Length: 168
Image (cartoon, rainbow, N blue to C red; front, side, top):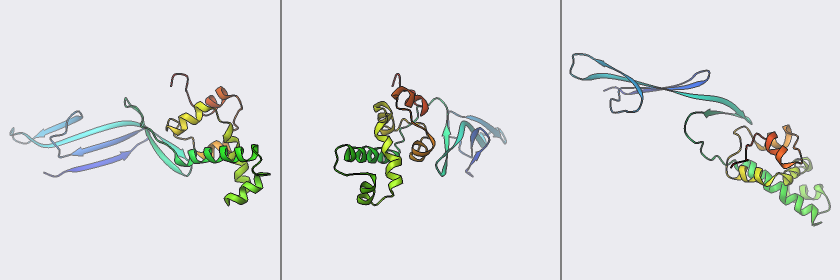
């Protein structure tokens, strides 16, 4: 029996179609009979609602539906927060005299150090959400450090970043 699976991304959904697998269950399907002896072909189609979201330079497919989203820890974002905190601690404890010294020690541009240092003031609940992968899919280190003006108030940060943490 011929097996054929096709995937197609349409405007607001992802279509998965499979032909030739009579054992597949829990799907919308059509059976065509040739001579009453049983199925000769089976077509299964699944339409999954989704959104395309830009995330930095990549584009992600965000599937919606009844399932709980899986954890997606962004290592680059976590590292940026850790660096911002470490650099602020070095400056606050007077281990270094300025951001230029930090930049020279770590081999990065001074502008990068100054861009990441405000991450030391993120709300603990925001840091916890990011470290456990519960941040919105489009929240990247780039967006957090260049495109969002972070408020100092922690509840305002949660709102600005699209995090609903009241009952998390």
